[in-house]
Amino acid sequence: MTLNLRRLGLTLAAPALAIVVAFIITSLVLVAVGDPVGLVWQTLLTEPRPRTMVNIVNSAVTYYIAAVAVAIGFKMKLFNIGVDGQYRIATFAAALVAGHAWLPGPLNVILALLVAMAVGAVWAGIAGWLKVTRGVSEVISTIMLNTISAGLVAWGLRSWGSRAEGSNARSTTEIPESSQLDGLALVPDTPVRVYTLLLLAVVVGLAYWFVINKTRFGFDLRATGESETAAVASGVKVKRMVLIAMLASGAVAGLIGMPAFFGLDHAYGANFQDGVGFVGIGVALLGRNHPVGIAFAALLWSWLEKASDGLQLQADVSPALVYIIQGTILLAVVVAYEVVRRIEQRMEQRQVAAELDAPAATEGASA
Image: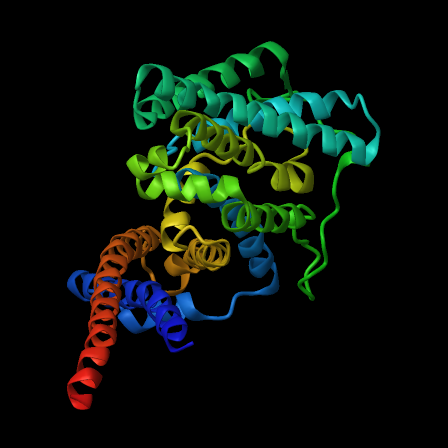
């Protein structure tokens, strides 16, 4: 019990230390450029308005799903940088299908979700197949696939998209009203609602936790990530695990755009949000690939983004300051996790040494 409490404390210490370090470094930057430190932090730490709170939660939902997609790869030491491209092409494909409304109401939503997962899995599977058959690094292949997906979607919009009168922007056909999700009234005093597919993020998180921690597949995934040699020795087919992990990561990546698509946008076009896949990398690192940690990291990241809107108006500071905070947190969290890991390792070594010395001391006393 004592060991578990100690481990829990060390686990919480790493992100807490990272946030403190980010606070100190950002304050020093503000002092160096002559900006008001107190006013900046007062602005950032002010309780957000109800409308802003809804926007924070909605962005966090998107970031959460993106981070889980990244975390699946991280568990196996795979760096899936292609989440952004997988999310882009999957959202576009789902928007095309949902816009045709081949099925009524909720069935149309379910069909679009399945299409998004399938397309995202296939797009990530290309990188997985190249890795297991040709030894191509997933970092290189997924970066290239990001660019290819952007080109394909742009071509798809020109081919199948429509252009509103008086606008040069193209978009897919808007989904019927029966497939539009009104949202959840979770925050009072505002007409803006939380995405209904917040429930999808909860399901994704629970499924991720269960598969990783409670199934043989999850054990093999983690074992391969810890030591590929040991995994092979225990009978794990590493190449198959790599391919399945990439497919699973891509399938989850395909769901990233669904909450905003069904809850707000209702069509794919100029409102597409770039860079979510890369935000997912940062959120997954900050949350240490744990479903609960990722949830808090997603909320923190989203809160920093939305709170930055008032920096220029209230503190006369560029909103880009938030990028400094986010970047510093990421750098600090990597260092903090390594420091905490070494401390934990030394504590375990001391405990083992003490347990080994105890019997020897008892035998000496008896003699």
